[in-house]
Length: 383
Image: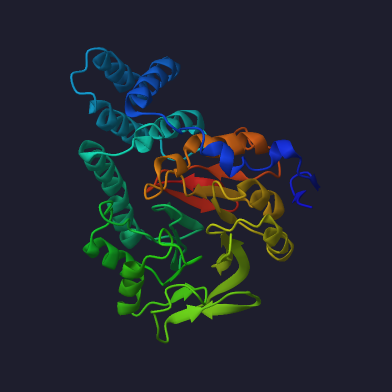
């Protein structure tokens, strides 16, 4: 039985995570012309609600232009640009929740196009702008209090405290989705103190980046079966090592054993400068979260948006929830989990502003975005 730690009661079906089979239907069989029509209709619907914002001004301009558009693919770059400008103008905060939600929902449409040269160019450019900025911020930002958290690609996160900088499931994207150049990957490796990998799937364990970490003399933490070709003193292989943590330069790493189907998947709990951060990779077994909730008071939960997120939240009752794994572009179109799924699960958990006393705060980030979290203050600001 899974308990809802917010209410102390078993989780009813209405509050469990949306099943995998449901979210893959959301864009199943939807071709680009249909996605374009839906996206433009969505813009026309939401733009008037946010009068005076870039979403309203440029959104309506895109909608008007589309009526007589000569280029059937132009909408991809237009919508991505609109989302980027909206998110830049409205960084993560409680006050901007509604407009950020609409911008992230808009992002689902171009990211579910089947492909093509124009799509590839526009999408890769979009991700590179966000992720290149994030790598530079990670290298240059000083933290004096609390945590800075950057969401990178897929389930990749970087957490920076006053004394430490650590990474989870860092992935630069594989060709042709090369989001981070070698120079940027090496800059990121130099910035990190160590990096963890949850499991032996290519969208989580990137051998190239891990080699850059090792070349920089930085430890990598992996399950025993993950990238077995890596060896050396800085390759730390953990599995069910949560009772006695592994210490890395003053950071405690607890590894709880989970699984994705038959693949071992570590669920990490890391204690960094007095804060507790947990990341679950692709773990599909909600029964493994109960022990984490019993043993740790979790500050920040970095949760896979589609793999038992609701049960993970309910078992651990974190102070802050940040989701990952939306729109994994190396998956087929029907297996790219949309932000629509994430917000649907949050609605089922009743986790949206205004926040109830004792319930987690939530921040939904695009890849490359960052927030500053201080336990006593909540989201204290962004870069």
